[in-house]
Every structure is written in structure tokens, then in C-alpha cells.
Image 1 (spheres, rainbow, N blue to C red):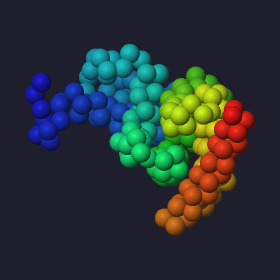
Image 2 (cartoon, rainbow, N blue to C red):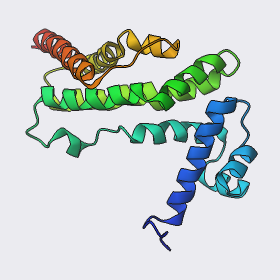
Image 3 (cartoon, rainbow, N blue to C red):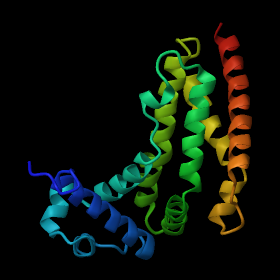
Length: 211
């Protein structure tokens, strides 16, 4: 396959152009009001090219959410290897996820989905599954594997939900209502440390319950 001048395959560049254009149009016009034809025109590709990557608009929207989350994705190598303690892993994950929630594009996505929820419940479900559910599933796996089977999978999932709920705090609601919500670097670190400490306490209680 011929590579672009930036060293990336042309198919990758087209995919990113499609996703960037779709994101802009979804945020500007709403998901329901945006057509695949408009995305094709905006991204400078044919409609056939769009459909060669995504079978329908639902698949495209899910891909946009996943693509945005990839910027803040925690990979195994980010956790520091097998010797990383659970506390360090949670700090790394919390720091990344907090940056995701504070991203203005992500906040706009949340607002757009909330505005469309009544008229397009399918879109809300797609967002929920591609974003929050995927995040909980991924963290559940981390908590379960790093706990060396000392807590059950159900408890690991509950702990993951608590983790993300605590991270959102009250500032997340403020961000969705266009109220002041900014956190500086020191505030972010303090918030992450507080959440991780609470989750470790909950983790210990789950461990004692299963012991």
C-alpha cells in the first residue's frame, strides 16, 4: 500500500478525515440532522468511500466516539508493566480519563447527545455503549486482573462504576450546564489522588468481603 508523505497509509488519512468531518458536523448540526452525503462532501471523499469504512451512520457515530477516546486510551504499556501496583495504575487511568472529560469536544458531545436524547434515543444508546460502557468494561478488566482474583468480576465492575462516578464529581455537571468548571493542574492532581484513595478503600472492603 502506498504511504502518504507523512508516512501514514492513505486509507488511514481518509478514515481520519471522515471521522474529523463527521465529528464537526455532528456537533454543529446534531447527529440526526447530519447525512452521510454531507460527511462525504465535508471530508472530500466519495459517499462510496464513506460506506466502504462504515456501513451506516450508526457505525460512523460509534467510530467517532471511539476515535476521540483513543486520544486518552490507557494501554498496558502505560501502566508500567507487571510490577505496577494498583494505586499507580489507577492514578494513570484517572489522569487520562479526567483529561478526556475536560476536553471541550467531549463536553460538546455530551451536550449534543443530551439535547437529542428524546428525539433520537438510539443515538444516546450508541454514545453510552461506545463511551461509558466501554470505559467501565476496560477498567473492570484491569481491576480484576490486578487484584489477582481476590475480588470477583461483579465487584470489579461495581468498583469501576464507582471510580468513574467519583471522578466526574460536581464539576462534570457544571460543564454540561455551561457553568464554570475548569480545573488547573494542581486541582486535577488533588482530585485524582482523592478519588484513587477512596477507590482503594472500597477495593479493600470488597477484598475482605470475598476473603
